[in-house]
Image 1 (cartoon, rainbow, N blue to C red):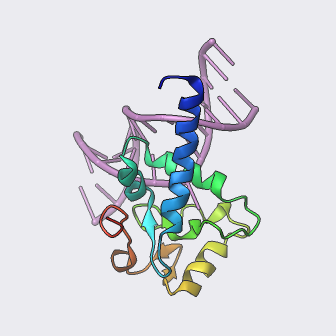
Image 2: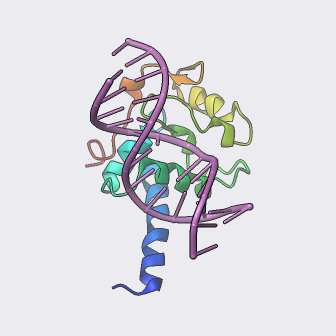
Length: 120
DNA sequence: CGTTTGACGCCGA
DNA sequence: ATCGGCGCCAAAC
């Protein structure tokens, strides 16, 4: 299982895995890169999670993967600039019931959704 | 092939 | 509590 193809597949699987986890995030809830990375095994830096999301969001308004529900550990909308519009992330979150102020999720502790804890 | 950056997180001062 | 630096992995130049 050391074939180059398998390694490449493993990496690709990681991206797909991130998409799946993010897609499982219920509306009105938000998760963090670190939580997802940890859920996947913490083997990948939290950065890779965000990196995977870039590939997940074609930046064309496709909401297949609610990447807006994924924020950093501080509950800050760090990736808002990657959306179709800088406010799309906040707008979407507020539309789902998540209060956002100053690019920061309010009651982040309440809306926080941990896959390793909630998803089991 | 080597260097740099990136949707982050944690540790130390 | 706040600020800075280092680390992880991969892709892009």
